[in-house]
Every structure is written in C-alpha cells, then in structure tokens.
Amino acid sequence: MLTVVAKVRATKGKGDALAALLREQVAAVRKAEPGCLVYRPHRSTKDPDLFIFYEQYKDDAAFDVHRKAPHLAAYRERR
Image (cartoon, rainbow, N blue to C red; front, side):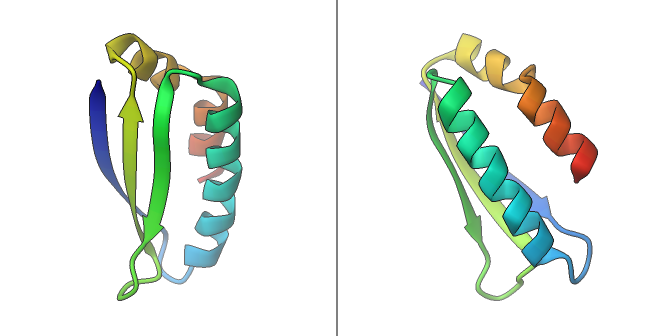
C-alpha cells in the first residue's frame, strides 16, 4: 500500500472554486481508479484556500495509473 499526503493551495480568494473542482476530481478518481483506496481532500478551517489531500493506493502501479490519468491532466489544466 502507498499513502500520499499532498497540500494544494488555491489562488487567494479562490478556495470555493477549487473546492468545486476538487469535488469533480474526487468523483472521477472514485469512478475510474479501482486501485485508489482513499482519495479525500480536507479543507483547512483556518485558511479557506488551503486543502490537504489524503490518498491511499493499492500499490505503486495504482499510483502510476492515477498520475497518468486523463482526468488528473484535465484537473491540472483547469486549476
């Protein structure tokens, strides 16, 4: 199992827009990546533009699938 903790920061004042985009991303990951066991963003209560992701993958291969997924590339372009 592989665990990833990642920090994502929205452009100042754009936390709500990023939150909406992240909801779409979570749905896409859950639908398309069976090797992703947990994919959960958490929004800071002190900084509404800061998100921490907690992710778990079955193995390195599952994480590689995630990194190369078209929905992740689309998310990066929109962010």
